[in-house]
Structures are given as C-alpha cells and as structure tokens.
Image 1 (cartoon, helix red, strand yellow):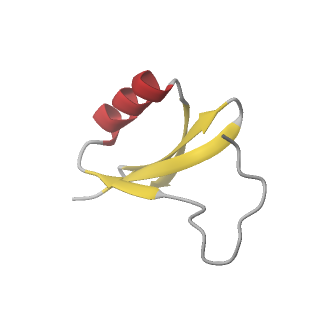
Image 2: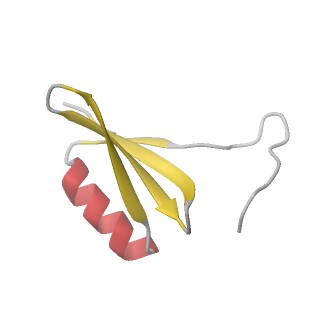
Length: 64
C-alpha cells in the first residue's frame, strides 16, 4: 500500500535504532523484499534507508 497523502497526526516515517545494523538490514531486506541504501553518518556509523520499488519505507541507524 502506498500512502500518497498524510493527514495531520498520521504516522509517516520510522527510524529504527539497531544494535547490529548489518544483521537488521539483512533480515528486513529478505523478509520484506527491500533494497537498502547506506549513507555515512560519521566515523563508524551508517544511516540505512530501506526502499521498496524505489520508494523509501523506513530507515535504521546504529546505537551503542
């Protein structure tokens, strides 16, 4: 389902913190058939956006 309009107060984006971004990325790409795009966040940190058919779904980032 693609949401084209977000009413005020509706959920529209999720950032998911993860202790192991590589494992989480592998899990969600397999489970949901997503593609991942990684962007450096600084030394040793990466922000990963998960996409379906070219549309961004949610993202994850490392926590320590």
